[in-house]
Length: 83
Image (cartoon, rainbow, N blue to C red; front, side, top):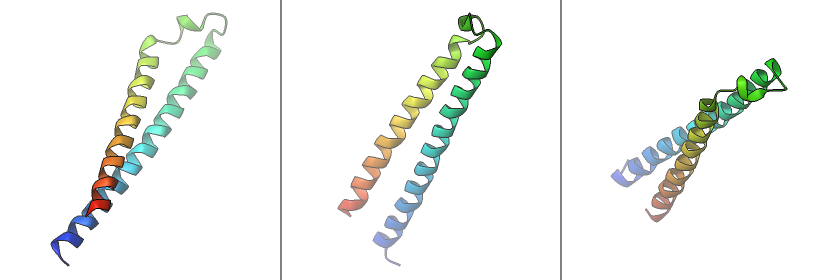
């Protein structure tokens, strides 16, 4: 296997790992949403008393991580295409 073929193969592995991470982050956001809905059921009239603000911040951070993963994937794919 040439060095170029090996590089392309390793880039493919990296792409798969990043794709997996992106999927897990999506699952994480769903779980955070489920947790928020469960908390709201504890006091539906005053959800602000049971849903910690940090839960929303966590979701925002996961969303930013998803965006970063997408940007990295785009850069990686662009690089691999240019090989």
